Image 1 (cartoon, rainbow, N blue to C red):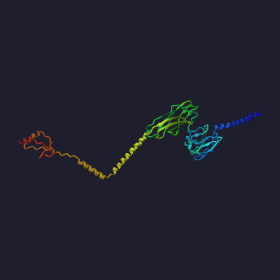
Image 2: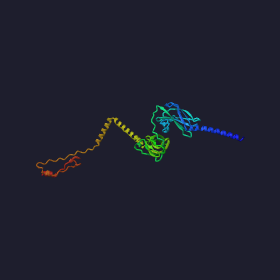
Image 3: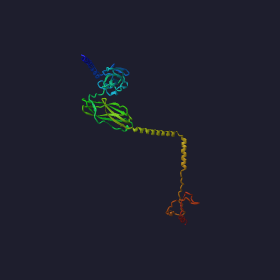
Image 4: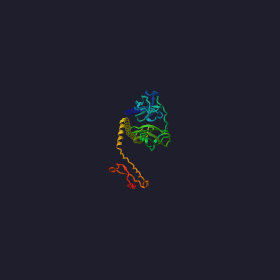
Length: 372
C-alpha cells in the first residue's frame, strides 16, 4: 500500500498534464496556421483612420501594419513594400493569445488602388501575413496586372546587359541597356505575362525597383529568353548594380559601369571661353561707336598727309624735237638717215641741258653736209 499510493498520484498528475496538452494543441495549431485581420470600416479617406483587429498570430509576435496599393487578398501586395505607404505604417505586438487591436491612419499609397491593409509578422518562426480590403476615398484605381498563374520561374543562365552608349549619352542623355536573361518554369502550370521588378543601385545605396511586364507565356518545364529595358537618370555615371526580382525573390544581379559624360564638360569649357570673347567683342564695338568722330577724322587726315609727304616723285621727261631741214634741201637724205634714240645726260656741264633732262644728240655729219 505504501508503494502503490505514490504511483497512483504520479499517474494522476501525468493524466492531467496530457489532458491540458491535448486540449491546447489544436487551438495553437489553428492560431498559427490561420491568422485573420478585420477592419472597423471598409472605406476611409486620407487623413482618417481605421481600427485593425487580428487573431491567430501567435503570442507576443511583432507585426507591421501598412496601407498598400495594387494589391488584393488573393494575390497579395504586387511590388512588395514599394507599393505601400511606408511612412504612415504602424507596429503592434500581439498578446499571449495572438490577438491585437491597433488604430491605423489612412494614407494614399504611391500606386493606384485596389488597396488593402497589409499585416505581416516581423518576428517569429513563420512569416505569417494577411490582407483586408480597404477603399481609400479619392485615390485613383487601376486594374491589376495579369496574373502569372501558379507556375514558378527560376533563373537558368546567360544573364547580361546588351547595348551601348551613343553620342547623346556622351552629352548627358540617360544611359539605357537591355537586361537579357533566361528563365525556366519549374511549376505545374504555365506562367502568362509575368511581372518582374528591375532595380538599379548606385554605390552603397539600396536599389530602386520598377515593374517591367514581359508579354508571353512560359510553359511548364520550358525555358524562355526575356529582355527587359533598363534606363538610368540623365547624366548618370559611375558603378551601378542592376537587380532582377520575381515574386519577392532576387533572381539575378549584373554590374554596370557607366562612363562620365565628357561632352557636358567640354560644353562648359567652350562656354567659358566663347562667352567672354563675345562679350569683349561686343564691348569693343560699343566703344568704337561711341568714339568722337571729329578727332577720328582729323587723325585720318594727318595720316594721309604723312603718306603724301613720303611719296617719291620722278622728274618729268621731255621728248626730243627734230630740227627743221636747211633751205634748199629736199629731205631725201634725212629720210635715209637712221633715227638716233634719245639718251639721258645727268651732267651736261655748264651751259648744257639741265640735270635729269633729255637731250637729242647733234648730228655733225648732217650739219656739215647741209653747209656744203
